[in-house]
Image (cartoon, rainbow, N blue to C red; front, side, top):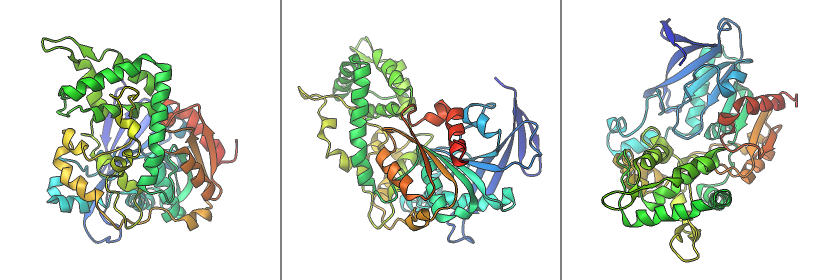
Amino acid sequence: MPKTTGTRGAGHATFRQPGLALTDHFFDVPLDHTAPDGERIRLYAREVVAAGRAHEELPWLVYLQGGPGFPAGRPVGRENWLDRALEDYRVLLLDQRGTGRSTPAGRQTLPLRGAPEQQAGYLAHFRADAIVRDCEYIRPRLTGGRPWAVLGQSFGGFCAVTYLSLAPEGLAEVLITGGLPSLDADADTVYRAAYPRMERKSLAHYARYPQDEEAARRIAEHLAGTQEVLPDGTLLTVQAFQQLGILLGTGDGSHRLHYLLEDAFVPTVDGPRLSDAFTEQAAALLSRAGSPLYTLLHEAIYAQDERATHWSAERIRAEFPQFEQHFEPDGRFLFTGETVHPWMLRTHAALRPLRHTAELLAERKGWTPLYDAGRLARNTVPVAAAVYHDDLYVDTEHSLRTARAIAGLRTWVTDEYEHDGLRASGRVVLDRLLRLVRDEA
């Protein structure tokens, strides 16, 4: 493991890893940017620069993580996409508000806000528009007012399109991977497109590993009659087990799911039970302990009008009965993933204390618009986006329609990578986008 050393500077710490210099930054920003004199919260961001270049005048690139509800990655040396980015940029890894070291929001901290009503009102300020305003608050303090580049992965790409809508003057160029959102689709429309993709991904998995369909059905039948509790206290129901299909949206996910299923059971004095090895892995994949905002705000990222999301994924699932027909003679077991449901607030240990807060957010109305179609049609910021063919998490047709709606945007549509292309082959993906956005391809 690389050795890490640290020194303390003026209000922040600088650390060194092989090939890197990393500096901590903290910023106090308004909770509500429309009330700049009101309550403030703390943001954390990590500056990363190539070793030996810390004093150079390099352009900035801010990285916006996927999610919602996940902090930026913690680098260990010049790995993956970061290695390519550091050839051109000084990189800022931002923990979006509510994540990581940025005033984290979860079952332990949200009660400090008061009752669930106060918690829900507080979290209403944690969507893409607030994240963009945070970036604009930070930018002049780091760049001296110069525009910077943005790299947005998945939900980070949604934020980047909001950035182009709200504050394009702050942007030198925009790079998006697997994150071009629909500009006008509500949550219901998003999930009506998502369930058929989940079915296709499940059937494609069974085509690769035919034995897995019987293995999955056996686990589902077991869970229908036997209570299994994961090591973190989460109740593993049939529907929760289905959500392991979230793996099928990643490049190696089908193989990982196969290995998980193949040795699920062990004999015990009480008969066959799910093995500790299986439940430990399932707990890690299904846990929301470290990312509660992924559940609390997931459907809110699609809300832009007076309507409540009202547990959209749960309601729309009823339109696809094939996801409930596991035990019928001709039924097939289908995996899901990338959806949130009200039952998760009962089965997932880390979410149970936030049940009422989640219900209030699901019924909240009056969400503000996140995108400005007119402004995007007049866009002058160079933009390039990787669109992954048949992406499990972000509908390809929605993405391509948005690509046509943003003036000057250049796309790279590929089936070589899944949604995690930036993680799996980040240097290749980022280099391709940089050449596109600079008109070098």
